[in-house]
Image 1 (cartoon, rainbow, N blue to C red):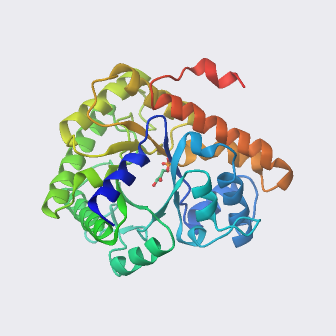
Image 2 (tube, rainbow, N blue to C red):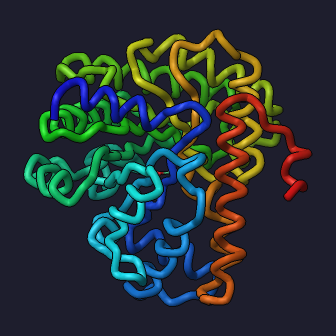
Length: 341
Ligand code: 13P
C-alpha cells in the first residue's frame, strides 16, 4: 500500500457528512448487549444482528466505514455474500479491531493496559488479505483516586504507537483510540486535564515511533462530566472544552477525529458533536465526526430483539441515527429533526 493510498483511505474515513460505525464488540461485549434484549449469544445470532446492520439501505450515505470484530470479518450475509463485499457494494470501508483487550496493569491497581502486540504484523497482513482497510486499538484510562498514574498513561501511549506503526507497515490506516472513561464522579475540569495529558503522551509516542500522522485517525472521548458527578456540564461547554483540548494536543496533520460515545445517550452524543461543528465552523484544522458504537446501535438493537420480522424497523432506526450524526458532523443537526421521518 503506497503512502498516497493510506492518506486517501484516512481522508475517506472522515469524508464530509460521514462517520464510522463501531460494530466490533468482542464476543463477551456483544453478550452484554444481547442480554439487554434477551437474545442468546450464538454465532448465528451475532451474524444475523450484524447482517441486519450492514444490509441497511443507504447506510453508505452517512457511514464511511465499519469496524468489525475478527469473527465478523470472516462472516457472510444470509445471501452468501461476504460482509466485506456487502460493505464495498454500499461504498463502506471495512475495518478491524486488532487489540486483544484491556488487561490489569501490573503494580497499578485498578488500571488497565491494552494488549495485542504479539503477532500483530502477521495478523495485520491476514486482515489486509481479507479486505480490511483500517484498524482500531482502544486504550482505557480511568479517572479515580490517584488515577490515572503516569505509568498507565505512558504504557498505553507506547502500545498505541507501536500498534499504529505496525498497521502502517502492513497497509492499514490505524484508528488511535485513547478513551478516558466517563464512569466516576469526577468534574469536567478533571476530565479536561486528564484528556490533555493523555493526548500529549500519545502524540509524543507516535512521533517517537515514526508514525505518519496524515495516515492516521484519532478516536478520542469527549471532555465531559463524570457520569456520577452531581454537576453535569451543558452541551456547549462539553463541546468547547473538547475542542480546546484537541487544539492544544492534536497536530493539524492528523487526517481526522472521530469520537467514541462512551456511554452517552444517543441524542446527547449527537448534540455534542453538532455543537462542536457549529461553534467552531471553519476554525478547525481537522474534520470532527463520529465513530459511535452504542450511540448508533442502541435504538436498532432495541427494535430488533432477535426477530426477523423486526429487521426493517431496526434498519430504519440505524439509518435515522446515522443520518442525525452525519448532519451533526456538518453542524446541521437540530433536536427537532429527531421527530421528523
Ligand atoms: P461506544 O461509542 O459505544 O463507546 O463504542 C465505540 C468504540 O468503538 C469503543 O471502542
